[in-house]
Image (cartoon, rainbow, N blue to C red; front, top):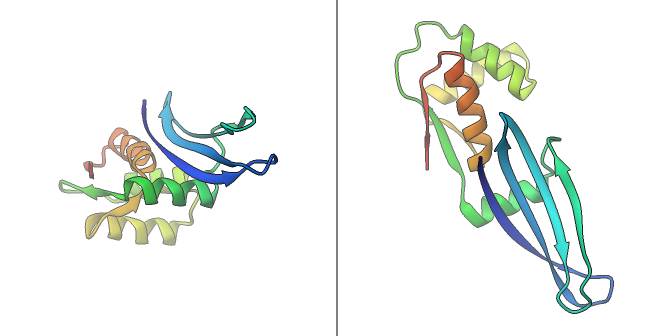
Length: 136
């Protein structure tokens, strides 16, 4: 399992400062995220979400702010771009023209995202025969 955690300062219903702990990770070849809330003042605690749905922008932004982005890069020759296009279309739900653009980015500066996102995408690309590595 690959993952990262970030903490977001929030306000509890009791009025005290509280913490929202967010995570994104790969579990059983699925990209997951979760969020938990806790207040030290009143003891309130709850699990806000745990599942493989797309990560909300605020969670993703907190993870990137806490840990910085990582890059996924092509590290070897790509005899055919078709496997990469196929994986990108399946994993990211993008059009073929967008998948083509992403493969070009992958071969130049690389794709950037959270550590879990790039590990997940990198695993799928490698299984499709695309030689990539995550550059932290």
